[in-house]
Image (cartoon, rainbow, N blue to C red):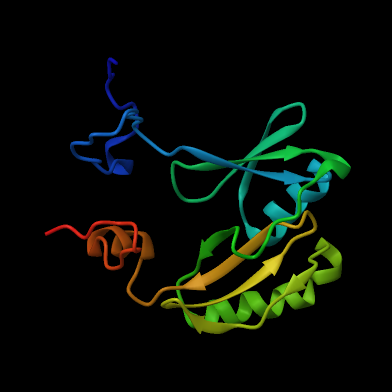
Length: 170
């Protein structure tokens, strides 16, 4: 298999290092979620969540915020597959107060944007956050991580736990 030069801007790159994997992609570039109606979902994404959206295909729009990664929202109508809270998208804010404010706004605008559920704010898994279920049964976590950008710590700390099927490095 041949590899080509990574086309991502230098400021967005994280060198994956040497890999023994079969495939050697240069980036995890997108994910997908489903929606009933693109117009209603776009309104929620832009007006409530503050995401940038572009309607790039007849039945899909791309959604992003703050980095070279996007979510493709695909309109499937009544064929939607509701998600579980463990399958969610995370949005980071810069303080505990912003989490509290976002929680209050989610409750305030619940009816306007068709938000189905807003769970309580709590400290869990190292962040201060809450979850909400949107009009399309997609879950969103609004979180504050006091040490900065949680992504960096996950990977800087490396493996800390191992399942019984994994071999702990020596």
